[in-house]
Image (cartoon, rainbow, N blue to C red):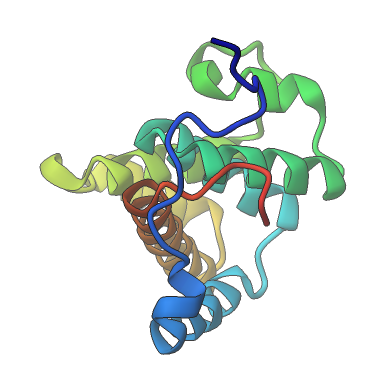
Amino acid sequence: MTTNANAPRHPARLDHARTAPRAFRAMIALDAAAREGLDPALVELVQIRSSQLNGCAYGLDMHVKDARKAGESDERIYLLPAWREAPEGVYSERDRAALALAEQITHIGGGVSDEVYGRAAELFPEQEPARLISLCCTINAWNRINVATRKTPGTH
């Protein structure tokens, strides 16, 4: 039996945009509002990291491509799963604060620590922590939709 190496491992279950168009448009609007005023490269790093933690292949494929379009380096993309151990200078203090916040929001079971929240609040102007929190919420929701519906990577 031969298989197509490019075929999805599991076929998509449904087209969320087509079957729940109002919810899909609302998610698009929330995503756009959350990104407003944030550095596009940082947005993509946060979305890649959340997608890694959530096991969302579609999100990884999409946001790695978008990060490259936003000028993100391969080094920063490749080291993202181990950003804490990355050499000094690879990620800025703002990057590290945003990634720590994204990880704790993604793994919300333990909440967001005062230390992680305080660091983000210290390094970002007043509106940006709220936008980062909204961004983390949207990417986690997108990841869950994509995983639940088996959205195929590369189909955006």
